[in-house]
Length: 107
Image 1 (tube, one colour):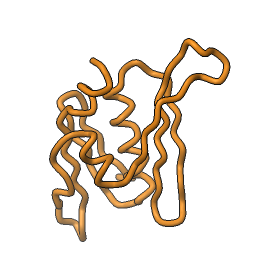
Image 2 (tube, rainbow, N blue to C red; image 1 turned 90 degrees about the horizontal axis):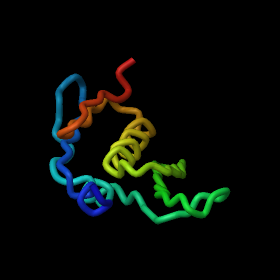
Image 3 (spheres, rainbow, N blue to C red; image 1 turned 135 degrees about the vertical axis):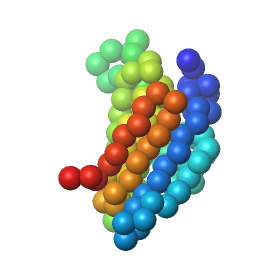
Image 4 (cartoon, helix red, strand yellow; image 1 turned 90 degrees about the vertical axis):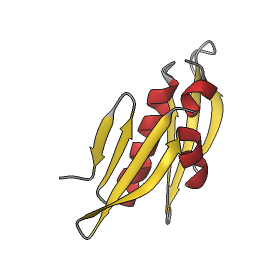
């Protein structure tokens, strides 16, 4: 699956507000990344120019995280970037896709 096909895969994100599940987003990975202003750029591995990857700039409040990944499973890259964003927010959340379901911040 190429980057564009992966970016257009379905994702549903919910969070819990005072114990009540609230739908935050239902759409594509790319749509959620755009909604949350998560920037993506293509990068080349610093030690081996044959490896291509993605860089995600994830910002929440006064914190910014840069997530560099060199993986050909682009859907997994988008999924992990969203999980990092939700972890930084700190609220209980869930991410559901056709391949995975993950709860975030559920100690």
